[in-house]
Length: 384
Image 1 (cartoon, rainbow, N blue to C red):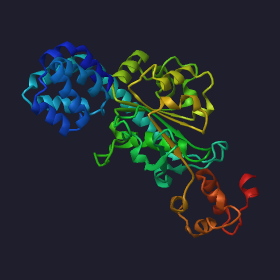
Image 2: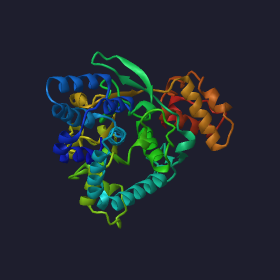
Image 3: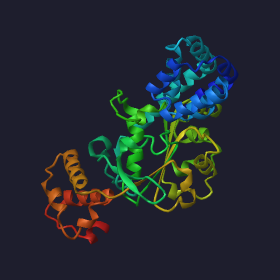
Image 4: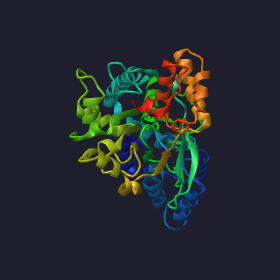
Protein backbone atom coordinates (compact mmCIF):
# COMPACT_ATOMS: atom_id res chain seq x y z
CA UNK A 1 0.00 0.00 0.00
CA UNK A 2 1.18 3.52 -0.74
CA UNK A 3 2.58 5.52 2.16
CA UNK A 4 -0.04 8.26 1.71
CA UNK A 5 -2.80 5.67 2.07
CA UNK A 6 -1.13 4.22 5.16
CA UNK A 7 -0.84 7.72 6.63
CA UNK A 8 -4.49 8.39 5.78
CA UNK A 9 -5.59 5.30 7.71
CA UNK A 10 -3.35 6.21 10.64
CA UNK A 11 -4.49 9.83 10.83
CA UNK A 12 -8.15 8.87 10.61
CA UNK A 13 -7.98 5.77 12.82
CA UNK A 14 -10.21 7.07 15.62
CA UNK A 15 -12.82 8.26 13.14
CA UNK A 16 -12.80 4.95 11.29
CA UNK A 17 -12.94 2.77 14.40
CA UNK A 18 -15.92 4.76 15.65
CA UNK A 19 -17.84 4.89 12.37
CA UNK A 20 -17.15 1.83 10.23
CA UNK A 21 -19.71 -0.94 10.41
CA UNK A 22 -18.28 -4.34 9.54
CA UNK A 23 -21.55 -5.28 7.92
CA UNK A 24 -22.12 -8.46 5.95
CA UNK A 25 -22.30 -6.37 2.78
CA UNK A 26 -18.97 -4.62 3.39
CA UNK A 27 -17.16 -7.85 4.27
CA UNK A 28 -18.62 -9.60 1.22
CA UNK A 29 -17.41 -6.84 -1.10
CA UNK A 30 -13.95 -6.79 0.50
CA UNK A 31 -13.72 -10.56 0.05
CA UNK A 32 -14.95 -10.53 -3.54
CA UNK A 33 -12.47 -7.82 -4.55
CA UNK A 34 -9.56 -9.67 -2.92
CA UNK A 35 -8.87 -7.05 -0.25
CA UNK A 36 -9.32 -9.73 2.41
CA UNK A 37 -8.93 -13.50 2.21
CA UNK A 38 -11.21 -16.10 3.78
CA UNK A 39 -8.65 -16.40 6.58
CA UNK A 40 -8.79 -12.64 7.21
CA UNK A 41 -12.59 -12.79 7.20
CA UNK A 42 -12.75 -15.49 9.84
CA UNK A 43 -10.27 -13.67 12.05
CA UNK A 44 -12.21 -10.39 11.85
CA UNK A 45 -15.49 -12.15 12.60
CA UNK A 46 -13.95 -13.90 15.61
CA UNK A 47 -12.63 -10.59 16.99
CA UNK A 48 -16.00 -8.95 16.40
CA UNK A 49 -17.77 -11.85 18.11
CA UNK A 50 -15.41 -12.19 21.09
CA UNK A 51 -14.40 -8.56 21.58
CA UNK A 52 -15.93 -5.51 19.85
CA UNK A 53 -16.52 -4.20 16.35
CA UNK A 54 -14.00 -1.43 17.10
CA UNK A 55 -11.34 -4.04 17.87
CA UNK A 56 -12.09 -5.85 14.62
CA UNK A 57 -11.93 -2.59 12.63
CA UNK A 58 -8.61 -1.74 14.30
CA UNK A 59 -7.23 -5.16 13.31
CA UNK A 60 -8.34 -4.57 9.73
CA UNK A 61 -6.83 -1.06 9.58
CA UNK A 62 -3.48 -1.90 11.17
CA UNK A 63 -2.73 -5.54 10.34
CA UNK A 64 -4.67 -6.42 7.19
CA UNK A 65 -5.28 -3.51 4.81
CA UNK A 66 -1.76 -1.95 4.91
CA UNK A 67 -0.23 -5.30 3.89
CA UNK A 68 -2.37 -5.83 0.83
CA UNK A 69 -1.76 -4.87 -2.82
CA UNK A 70 -1.36 -1.19 -3.82
CA UNK A 71 -4.89 -1.09 -5.25
CA UNK A 72 -6.43 -2.40 -1.99
CA UNK A 73 -7.06 1.08 -0.56
CA UNK A 74 -9.16 2.19 -3.53
CA UNK A 75 -11.04 -1.12 -3.48
CA UNK A 76 -11.72 -0.48 0.22
CA UNK A 77 -13.19 2.95 -0.60
CA UNK A 78 -15.31 1.39 -3.33
CA UNK A 79 -16.59 -1.29 -0.93
CA UNK A 80 -17.52 1.39 1.62
CA UNK A 81 -19.43 3.37 -1.00
CA UNK A 82 -21.39 0.31 -2.11
CA UNK A 83 -22.32 -0.80 1.41
CA UNK A 84 -24.17 2.30 2.67
CA UNK A 85 -20.99 3.87 4.12
CA UNK A 86 -20.20 6.34 1.35
CA UNK A 87 -19.80 9.17 3.87
CA UNK A 88 -16.74 7.39 5.30
CA UNK A 89 -15.19 6.96 1.85
CA UNK A 90 -15.85 10.64 1.11
CA UNK A 91 -14.18 11.65 4.38
CA UNK A 92 -11.01 9.73 3.46
CA UNK A 93 -11.00 11.08 -0.11
CA UNK A 94 -11.23 14.65 1.19
CA UNK A 95 -8.33 14.07 3.59
CA UNK A 96 -6.21 12.71 0.73
CA UNK A 97 -7.16 15.59 -1.54
CA UNK A 98 -6.20 18.20 1.04
CA UNK A 99 -2.84 16.56 1.76
CA UNK A 100 -1.79 15.57 -1.74
CA UNK A 101 -2.85 18.53 -3.87
CA UNK A 102 0.51 20.25 -3.38
CA UNK A 103 2.41 17.16 -4.54
CA UNK A 104 0.45 16.61 -7.77
CA UNK A 105 2.44 19.05 -9.89
CA UNK A 106 5.79 17.83 -8.58
CA UNK A 107 4.83 14.21 -9.19
CA UNK A 108 3.81 14.87 -12.80
CA UNK A 109 7.05 16.75 -13.51
CA UNK A 110 9.15 14.00 -11.91
CA UNK A 111 7.32 11.26 -13.77
CA UNK A 112 7.78 13.08 -17.09
CA UNK A 113 11.51 13.62 -16.45
CA UNK A 114 12.06 9.95 -15.57
CA UNK A 115 10.11 8.66 -18.55
CA UNK A 116 12.04 10.95 -20.89
CA UNK A 117 15.34 9.84 -19.33
CA UNK A 118 14.55 6.12 -19.64
CA UNK A 119 13.24 6.38 -23.21
CA UNK A 120 16.41 8.18 -24.28
CA UNK A 121 19.09 6.39 -22.26
CA UNK A 122 17.78 2.83 -21.98
CA UNK A 123 16.60 2.14 -25.52
CA UNK A 124 19.86 0.39 -26.50
CA UNK A 125 22.12 -2.33 -25.12
CA UNK A 126 25.87 -1.86 -25.30
CA UNK A 127 27.41 -5.38 -25.17
CA UNK A 128 30.98 -4.02 -25.01
CA UNK A 129 30.91 -0.95 -22.74
CA UNK A 130 34.66 -1.22 -22.20
CA UNK A 131 35.15 -0.11 -25.86
CA UNK A 132 33.18 3.14 -25.85
CA UNK A 133 34.75 4.57 -29.02
CA UNK A 134 33.99 1.58 -31.25
CA UNK A 135 31.17 0.01 -29.29
CA UNK A 136 28.10 -1.47 -30.96
CA UNK A 137 24.61 -0.59 -29.72
CA UNK A 138 21.69 -2.98 -30.10
CA UNK A 139 18.05 -1.96 -29.83
CA UNK A 140 16.72 -3.28 -26.52
CA UNK A 141 13.21 -4.01 -27.78
CA UNK A 142 14.49 -5.86 -30.87
CA UNK A 143 17.02 -8.15 -29.19
CA UNK A 144 15.78 -8.74 -25.64
CA UNK A 145 14.85 -12.36 -24.91
CA UNK A 146 12.30 -12.81 -22.13
CA UNK A 147 14.02 -14.66 -19.29
CA UNK A 148 12.83 -17.42 -17.04
CA UNK A 149 13.76 -17.15 -13.37
CA UNK A 150 14.05 -19.70 -10.60
CA UNK A 151 12.10 -18.65 -7.52
CA UNK A 152 13.24 -20.04 -4.17
CA UNK A 153 10.04 -21.34 -2.57
CA UNK A 154 11.25 -22.36 0.89
CA UNK A 155 14.24 -22.58 3.20
CA UNK A 156 15.03 -26.11 1.98
CA UNK A 157 16.24 -24.78 -1.35
CA UNK A 158 13.23 -25.88 -3.39
CA UNK A 159 12.70 -23.83 -6.54
CA UNK A 160 10.17 -23.36 -9.32
CA UNK A 161 10.39 -21.69 -12.70
CA UNK A 162 8.62 -18.34 -13.11
CA UNK A 163 8.60 -15.66 -15.80
CA UNK A 164 9.39 -11.96 -15.48
CA UNK A 165 5.63 -11.37 -15.30
CA UNK A 166 5.69 -13.07 -11.89
CA UNK A 167 8.34 -10.82 -10.33
CA UNK A 168 5.89 -8.75 -8.30
CA UNK A 169 3.30 -11.47 -7.73
CA UNK A 170 2.57 -12.39 -4.08
CA UNK A 171 4.12 -15.73 -3.18
CA UNK A 172 3.73 -17.87 -0.03
CA UNK A 173 2.45 -15.11 2.25
CA UNK A 174 -0.05 -13.85 -0.36
CA UNK A 175 1.25 -10.32 0.31
CA UNK A 176 2.95 -8.01 -2.16
CA UNK A 177 6.74 -8.61 -1.95
CA UNK A 178 8.60 -5.45 -0.95
CA UNK A 179 12.20 -6.72 -1.08
CA UNK A 180 13.22 -8.77 -4.11
CA UNK A 181 16.61 -10.25 -5.01
CA UNK A 182 17.77 -11.52 -8.40
CA UNK A 183 21.11 -13.36 -8.39
CA UNK A 184 23.11 -14.62 -11.35
CA UNK A 185 26.61 -15.00 -12.73
CA UNK A 186 28.37 -12.26 -14.74
CA UNK A 187 26.98 -11.73 -18.24
CA UNK A 188 23.85 -13.76 -17.53
CA UNK A 189 21.43 -10.86 -18.11
CA UNK A 190 20.70 -9.27 -14.72
CA UNK A 191 21.41 -5.74 -15.90
CA UNK A 192 19.36 -6.25 -19.05
CA UNK A 193 16.39 -7.35 -16.94
CA UNK A 194 16.67 -4.15 -14.89
CA UNK A 195 17.06 -2.01 -17.99
CA UNK A 196 14.04 -3.66 -19.62
CA UNK A 197 11.82 -3.08 -16.59
CA UNK A 198 12.70 0.62 -16.39
CA UNK A 199 12.43 1.11 -20.15
CA UNK A 200 9.03 -0.62 -20.32
CA UNK A 201 7.72 1.57 -17.50
CA UNK A 202 9.02 4.67 -19.25
CA UNK A 203 7.61 4.11 -22.70
CA UNK A 204 4.04 2.92 -22.23
CA UNK A 205 1.27 1.44 -20.11
CA UNK A 206 0.39 -2.21 -20.34
CA UNK A 207 -3.24 -1.19 -20.91
CA UNK A 208 -4.28 -3.58 -18.13
CA UNK A 209 -3.43 -6.55 -20.36
CA UNK A 210 -1.02 -8.05 -17.83
CA UNK A 211 -2.48 -10.92 -15.85
CA UNK A 212 -0.46 -10.11 -12.75
CA UNK A 213 1.05 -7.06 -11.07
CA UNK A 214 3.55 -5.63 -13.53
CA UNK A 215 6.01 -2.75 -13.67
CA UNK A 216 3.22 -0.46 -14.91
CA UNK A 217 1.47 -0.90 -11.55
CA UNK A 218 3.98 1.53 -10.05
CA UNK A 219 3.56 5.31 -10.09
CA UNK A 220 7.33 5.76 -10.32
CA UNK A 221 10.30 3.55 -11.18
CA UNK A 222 13.72 4.69 -9.94
CA UNK A 223 16.56 2.85 -11.72
CA UNK A 224 20.05 2.98 -10.20
CA UNK A 225 23.43 1.31 -10.24
CA UNK A 226 24.38 0.38 -6.67
CA UNK A 227 27.27 2.84 -6.80
CA UNK A 228 24.83 5.72 -7.24
CA UNK A 229 24.03 5.54 -3.52
CA UNK A 230 27.60 5.87 -2.26
CA UNK A 231 27.99 9.13 -0.31
CA UNK A 232 24.30 9.97 -0.87
CA UNK A 233 22.33 10.57 2.32
CA UNK A 234 18.96 9.56 0.86
CA UNK A 235 17.21 8.10 -2.16
CA UNK A 236 15.92 11.59 -2.97
CA UNK A 237 19.50 12.90 -3.19
CA UNK A 238 20.44 9.99 -5.49
CA UNK A 239 17.45 10.75 -7.73
CA UNK A 240 18.42 14.40 -7.97
CA UNK A 241 22.04 13.63 -8.80
CA UNK A 242 21.72 10.63 -11.13
CA UNK A 243 18.25 10.66 -12.70
CA UNK A 244 17.35 14.32 -13.18
CA UNK A 245 18.97 17.06 -15.30
CA UNK A 246 21.03 19.60 -13.38
CA UNK A 247 18.61 22.40 -14.25
CA UNK A 248 15.56 20.55 -12.91
CA UNK A 249 14.06 22.66 -10.15
CA UNK A 250 12.63 19.86 -8.02
CA UNK A 251 14.17 20.01 -4.54
CA UNK A 252 15.22 16.98 -2.52
CA UNK A 253 12.51 17.71 0.04
CA UNK A 254 9.90 17.73 -2.75
CA UNK A 255 11.34 14.50 -4.12
CA UNK A 256 11.20 12.91 -0.68
CA UNK A 257 7.56 13.90 -0.31
CA UNK A 258 6.59 12.40 -3.66
CA UNK A 259 8.56 9.19 -3.05
CA UNK A 260 6.87 8.74 0.32
CA UNK A 261 3.41 9.45 -1.11
CA UNK A 262 3.50 7.30 -4.24
CA UNK A 263 3.73 3.63 -5.14
CA UNK A 264 7.42 3.39 -6.07
CA UNK A 265 9.66 0.65 -7.45
CA UNK A 266 13.37 1.17 -6.74
CA UNK A 267 15.61 -0.94 -9.01
CA UNK A 268 19.24 -1.26 -7.92
CA UNK A 269 21.59 -3.15 -10.23
CA UNK A 270 25.00 -4.66 -9.38
CA UNK A 271 25.01 -4.78 -5.58
CA UNK A 272 28.19 -6.86 -5.79
CA UNK A 273 30.06 -4.00 -7.46
CA UNK A 274 29.39 -1.28 -4.87
CA UNK A 275 28.28 -2.70 -1.53
CA UNK A 276 31.23 -1.71 0.66
CA UNK A 277 30.42 1.35 2.77
CA UNK A 278 27.11 1.84 0.97
CA UNK A 279 25.09 2.97 3.99
CA UNK A 280 21.97 4.27 2.22
CA UNK A 281 21.61 1.09 0.16
CA UNK A 282 22.12 -1.01 3.27
CA UNK A 283 19.37 0.91 5.07
CA UNK A 284 17.07 0.45 2.07
CA UNK A 285 17.55 -3.31 2.09
CA UNK A 286 16.96 -3.53 5.84
CA UNK A 287 13.81 -1.43 5.57
CA UNK A 288 15.16 1.30 7.85
CA UNK A 289 14.03 3.75 5.16
CA UNK A 290 11.19 3.47 2.62
CA UNK A 291 10.10 0.16 4.12
CA UNK A 292 6.80 0.14 2.25
CA UNK A 293 8.35 0.79 -1.16
CA UNK A 294 9.29 -2.07 -3.49
CA UNK A 295 13.05 -2.65 -3.83
CA UNK A 296 14.53 -4.91 -6.52
CA UNK A 297 18.24 -5.75 -6.12
CA UNK A 298 20.50 -7.68 -8.52
CA UNK A 299 23.81 -9.23 -7.58
CA UNK A 300 26.25 -11.97 -8.36
CA UNK A 301 25.70 -14.98 -6.05
CA UNK A 302 26.80 -15.02 -2.40
CA UNK A 303 27.22 -11.27 -1.87
CA UNK A 304 24.05 -11.03 0.23
CA UNK A 305 24.28 -14.24 2.24
CA UNK A 306 23.90 -12.44 5.57
CA UNK A 307 20.89 -10.47 4.30
CA UNK A 308 18.83 -13.17 2.58
CA UNK A 309 16.25 -13.19 5.37
CA UNK A 310 15.42 -9.55 4.54
CA UNK A 311 14.08 -10.47 1.09
CA UNK A 312 10.49 -11.52 0.48
CA UNK A 313 11.25 -13.09 -2.92
CA UNK A 314 14.57 -14.52 -4.06
CA UNK A 315 15.15 -15.33 -7.74
CA UNK A 316 18.01 -16.89 -9.68
CA UNK A 317 18.61 -16.21 -13.37
CA UNK A 318 20.51 -18.95 -15.16
CA UNK A 319 21.89 -19.48 -18.64
CA UNK A 320 19.93 -19.69 -21.87
CA UNK A 321 18.32 -22.99 -22.76
CA UNK A 322 18.38 -24.13 -26.41
CA UNK A 323 15.17 -22.28 -27.28
CA UNK A 324 16.43 -19.02 -25.76
CA UNK A 325 19.75 -19.37 -27.60
CA UNK A 326 17.89 -19.71 -30.89
CA UNK A 327 15.69 -16.68 -30.13
CA UNK A 328 18.80 -14.66 -29.27
CA UNK A 329 20.62 -15.33 -32.55
CA UNK A 330 17.44 -14.92 -34.62
CA UNK A 331 16.76 -11.52 -33.08
CA UNK A 332 20.38 -10.48 -33.47
CA UNK A 333 20.29 -11.41 -37.16
CA UNK A 334 16.98 -9.62 -37.71
CA UNK A 335 18.32 -6.52 -35.94
CA UNK A 336 21.41 -6.51 -38.18
CA UNK A 337 19.25 -7.32 -41.24
CA UNK A 338 21.25 -10.41 -42.19
CA UNK A 339 20.46 -14.10 -42.58
CA UNK A 340 20.24 -16.09 -39.35
CA UNK A 341 21.59 -19.41 -40.72
CA UNK A 342 25.29 -18.74 -39.94
CA UNK A 343 24.39 -17.82 -36.37
CA UNK A 344 22.12 -20.82 -35.91
CA UNK A 345 24.83 -23.21 -37.10
CA UNK A 346 27.21 -21.61 -34.61
CA UNK A 347 25.05 -22.98 -31.79
CA UNK A 348 26.10 -26.52 -32.76
CA UNK A 349 29.86 -25.95 -32.91
CA UNK A 350 31.48 -28.20 -30.31
CA UNK A 351 34.30 -25.81 -29.43
CA UNK A 352 31.95 -23.09 -28.18
CA UNK A 353 28.64 -24.82 -27.51
CA UNK A 354 28.93 -24.45 -23.74
CA UNK A 355 29.56 -20.70 -24.11
CA UNK A 356 26.25 -20.10 -25.87
CA UNK A 357 24.19 -20.32 -22.68
CA UNK A 358 25.63 -17.01 -21.48
CA UNK A 359 23.86 -14.04 -23.16
CA UNK A 360 26.94 -11.81 -23.14
CA UNK A 361 29.16 -14.54 -24.59
CA UNK A 362 26.55 -15.35 -27.22
CA UNK A 363 26.35 -11.71 -28.29
CA UNK A 364 30.14 -11.56 -28.63
CA UNK A 365 30.06 -14.79 -30.65
CA UNK A 366 27.45 -13.24 -32.94
CA UNK A 367 29.67 -10.20 -33.46
CA UNK A 368 32.59 -12.44 -34.43
CA UNK A 369 30.45 -14.55 -36.76
CA UNK A 370 29.05 -11.42 -38.42
CA UNK A 371 32.59 -10.25 -39.22
CA UNK A 372 33.35 -13.52 -40.99
CA UNK A 373 30.59 -16.06 -41.59
CA UNK A 374 33.16 -18.69 -42.60
CA UNK A 375 35.25 -18.27 -39.45
CA UNK A 376 35.34 -21.26 -37.13
CA UNK A 377 35.17 -19.48 -33.78
CA UNK A 378 37.38 -20.71 -30.97
CA UNK A 379 37.63 -19.76 -27.33
CA UNK A 380 40.87 -17.97 -28.15
CA UNK A 381 39.10 -15.83 -30.75
CA UNK A 382 36.41 -14.92 -28.27
CA UNK A 383 38.78 -13.63 -25.61
CA UNK A 384 41.40 -11.91 -27.79
